[in-house]
Length: 454
Image (cartoon, rainbow, N blue to C red):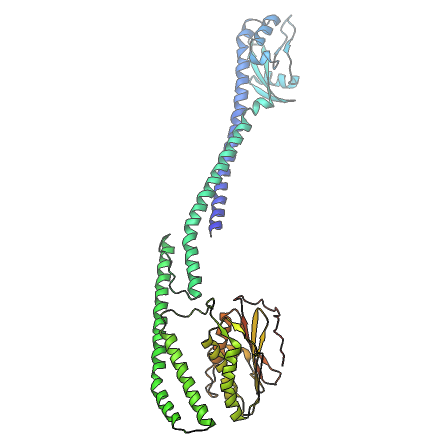
């Protein structure tokens, strides 16, 4: 917008300067030409009194030399013959005889084009029958004297006007653009999750109104998020009572693997509900951007969660394999987020595949990325794109459609992504790519460690 304003001002100023400077330059040239020929007419008129007194060659030569044009050799006299007096020609004449006779016959001044300039032919009557012609040479330099200087001055004034107009337009553009840039930067920061950003309410009226509307919208977003957190906390808190009853009932189940698994599941559910309540009660909303220094050991978390899910898999006769967790793998993801993502994926395996279906979890550490593969030997996912869309659950199968969305948001918070494909086991493979440097992978670029291995 700033440069558009400068270009418009430049175009308008140039048109105005051209509209005034070109006619003014032509007028200057015409004035210089008129001045040169007026001076020539005065020079010709100065010899008129001498011609009215005498036609003596000597006297006329002295009179011609007394004028500037005569002294410079630019004046000539053409006196026709009369009686016994022959024709008198004084000075260096440049006009042709036909042109001289035409002026003498018409009785008014004329201008003849001659080499190097023009010749002014002025008739002066000696008597009723005789008319002499005074020829004054006007060079091209005299006609254009001062024109170049005037044009240079006009061009300088025009350039100064254009530069000044561009400078003023640029300053005006900055004054208009700064509030717009502040509004755009604030919108980007708000989109990144910094809800405390506000825009100064200054600048032109329209931008000031936009800033007021943006600030009002940001306040409304903060209020809506606060209400959403309170609602999530309240809904989660309501689960405590049925969870308490469930825990008491689980405690009375006695001993055995099934009872232990049930009690462990109830404890895990209580921990998750507590985590939801604490997260919802936080004053600062989560932005989805990893906090520098925060993270967890993915290998440790996977070992812990696989210990839990392997027990359930043993009850259902599911073969389980785990790879890549024999050494620490640090990732910029909070432990609670990784636990939630793993539980969502492994829970989907148990809910949507038949008993006895094998599954595996592989971890690949490529240096700058970490890839977690969760594979199963189930029927697979017919439409991976629809499965990754938030809320695309099927009520007939008991799916809410939020499990893969939890995983996707965790991966995208690090600059990575999630992909759904066909696993080597014959079923579904969920590939979670986690960036360790927070940068986004280039589309189509193959990462180290991105190959599948079993």
